[in-house]
Image 1 (spheres, rainbow, N blue to C red):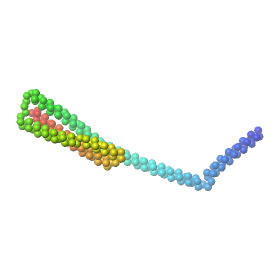
Image 2 (cartoon, helix red, strand yellow):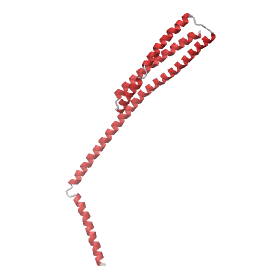
Image 3 (spheres, rainbow, N blue to C red):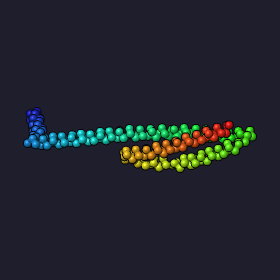
Image 4 (cartoon, rainbow, N blue to C red):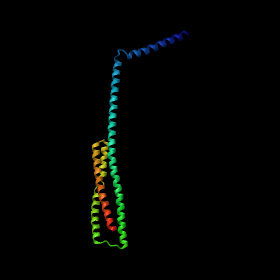
Length: 192
């Protein structure tokens, strides 16, 4: 029994001494802990700087997205107007065709003056339609450029692309409005 007690006491002393040696070795002259503390402060400062940079980038990206959304909404409004004008255009063309067909079936012959006006309107209608067709596909090309600018977060290029798309849409809308007014005048002549 005494041997067991001695072994326990000796092993406890060995354990305590080994632990105290490790503790004193880490704080031998005190400079190691100061160096580690300054490294920790430097790391914390770098982390804070990175967080600030990320916040700044997020803010810039958020502003960019908001500006792009405004531009995109303007383009969508013009596109919707373009669609409604095309739908009106289609309805007016059908109405004109139905009016001409009804006159032919009724045996009504247009006088020379009305026929000349219709021919003039028809020529003008063809030229405006050709003008409209000349802009077809331009927006798709610009949209491809716009995608590249979006990936690069290049707001100036995006703004220029949206402005160019908006200009083309306005030109197309003006042409559609002219076509619709010509069709209305032609319908009025046919219905006289």
